[in-house]
Image 1 (spheres, rainbow, N blue to C red):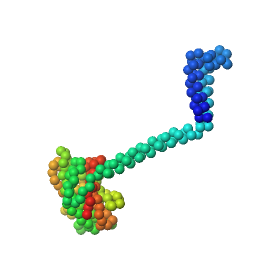
Image 2: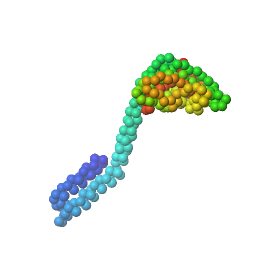
Image 3: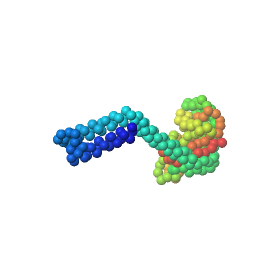
Image 4: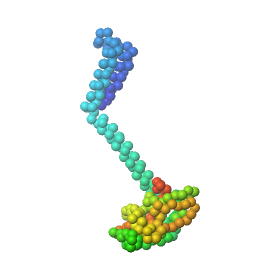
Length: 224
């Protein structure tokens, strides 16, 4: 039935084209046919074929939906493959070793855990525990770069992600400690400071460092 309706639909075009050239070729059963008659007749055939296609070929719409679904699935799979390739390219190093990523070179000098930070005026106490990372950094580009929360984060051994603890960082700043959040790094100058994260317990964590705003280049440092 599917092929019949397709042929019927195509025949409406053939009838229309031939009839526009010589109406009496296709409308011999009408006395003195003209192009208007041809148009109405070919239109009727076309409409009939479409109705038959919708009634007797239910898979027609499903085929289009399945094709669209397949294309969307392929796009999703390609995106997942690209994400996997990006994560596989992440360089790994350890405390005390310098790593260059994008616009910066990084070295983790030491780490320590604290339950609270700040002083008697401005202080923060963790629900879990704070992990403080003493980090040296150098802007290797030729222009000023600003560090923000998109430049670094932690993960544990299961891949659970921990963002930068901004409130704890503020408490550290006001108590006289040098932090790196929103630090403006001038070209070719070394600096160091503290990154602070709240984690559930003392354990081994990975510090992920990005070399640019989009995070397309990154490295991770095992903190142990």
